[in-house]
Image 1: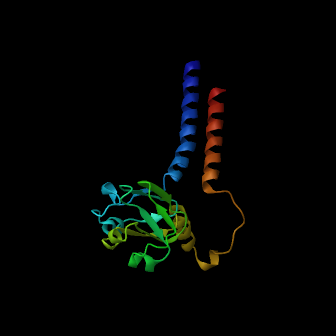
Image 2: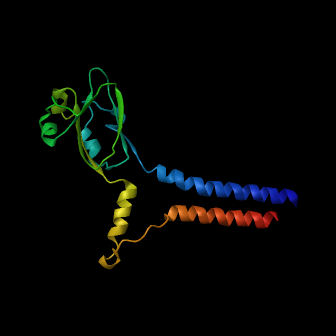
Image 3: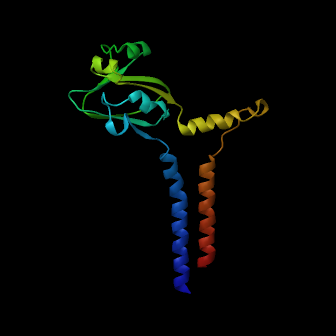
Length: 181
């Protein structure tokens, strides 16, 4: 009987641990890594425009540029005009190490081209339209589903996730206590 109670207590502990940790991991795993150009990377043989056509980039995502340095590099440009004309003389930032990553930390358009203007003219360039983070997009969608009458600002409240986590912990604690006593 004693061994059964200990095993049950361990099972309750493990379920509680998994129930509290897995949701945290799932929330963190929403951000995506994008290797520009896929398996071929950042190269003139890659059709970067086709690769990016079906991609959705969100705040928090990370884009990776893999290329053969020093023959190639990546420049981030300020404007669409510079991007369209492959004007690389006034970059925001230059990447030349061969493997670079950057987090998309703001919404809006970002423009990347080859450090070589000729390769840019051959299509080695990437326009990234950064959308709101997936969590933020969900919050916007949720708030848009409410009517005007319901748009009154509410006071502070605890998040559903924190409430659920606290409630679940309490239930498991009480259950373990009842079983062990």
